[in-house]
Image (cartoon, rainbow, N blue to C red; front, side, top):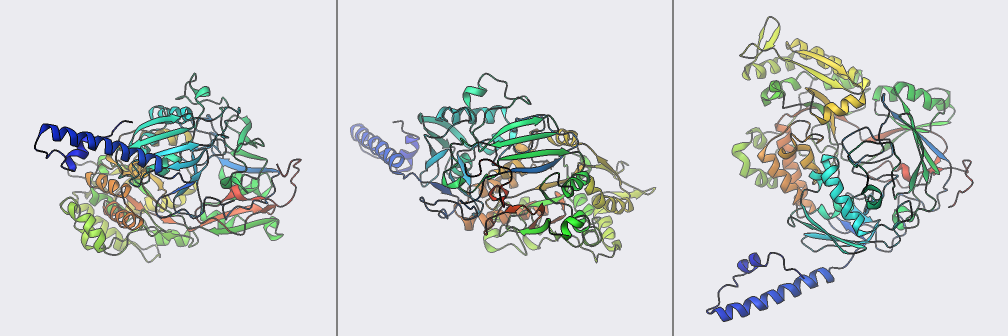
Length: 632
């Protein structure tokens, strides 16, 4: 067995102190044998487990039979009809690459109807991964590696077994040819190896990345025998080979995709899947317009819709279907961190390079008026990148946060240490003269002045930019914001583009400002690199839309990733949050703490709802929905 980094261990333990070459050699031999024995014991006696928890212990024991939010007696029947809204439909069945628009129901980094992953996440725990393809896992206390023991029953849809070779092939394929997100996500993986046909080990750069064993479990496993002779980095509508609970039954390119429950699914009886995936088929129909989709829902063309527009929720979900009880309108609370939605600056644009300018423009957004007049008072103002969670910073920094931030004091605004961050507010009556005066003071401080009713810099260049939108509903919020910006002498264009163009421009950072949403989990980690790290600022397809390049933020991200326990994670995340907020990289907007769901009264669902998901995969039809095979 190979000895890893023995020389550094010798130096650290001062083994080079004997008085003779012979005794030194003897000590070295003993040390090598000891280390080899120690490593062997570490790898063989680290007990295999059914689940990996980020902090603490898994909620469910090894002999659990099903998640609490799933009902193992649920009927399996019928067709679930859903809607996807896109003016351009879809042109790809490969969700793992940057090219093309993948069909609904496939996945990028998450669960999928079509592909299984090594492990699956519980929706009632902040971050715990339970075995799926991998029936057992091993890792040492320092989390410097993880071993996955593949379930011998695991199969692809063609009934060929899933092996360690498939896992390693997938990892190499995704990190070399897949969406750039994968390379960032698995940045600290230094080695993958097959210990035998059904056992795979991943070794990590160091043990500081505590979540890496868990996110390795999120790796979807693709079949080597299918992909090795095909071009992976190419959007295609050829139906691929999967392994998940559903097969692709049919597709109408750009218009519809239908998934069929795989009645021979190898994992249908394991604990993490009991009571889930209860619909015989799942159909996504594409609609070019959200309003058309809503009318289709009311006409019983599909079954369920999650509404994201407050005006529509309050004004359009009515009629005889709702009055009679045939349709249900419900707000289902959740405990998800809501992250940050806001007007996102592209720092690659010179006019947004000065934080004073970015801070000034925030005074032109009148959230209180917008929430009252447009959103029916539905939203809470967002004041954190980790809103609706204990990870959000508030007030002045705590003593723990100050210890974290102190080494960077000279590189950060003084306000980080001395002031509580707060967004500009108004009375909500539409009069924002006070706010605009403050904006003018900040702009003047940054070197911008008014000439001939235009805001110009010292070189006479006028301030103007474009807000790119993909959702027409956002125009209601953007138009009043533009009007206020024009009062500051700023020319603003609003451009609505189709989804394909939007994705392409977003991936290449070809925009001035967008409305962006940075969703967060209850256990932030590696994905923070993709959002804010300098290495991702110029990588096409990364989610560092802002273009942040900050050594301080880079180091804070590393601290978040390496947090040894939940308490440290909370303090380190709050410190990162403060630095992001005082960078004025976005103009924060709002968030909601519930799912707004309208559906036809044909569903049953478990009495317990998951804390961190809607849990539609756990619902089922109340009775036999024209199924001839309800219990398989």
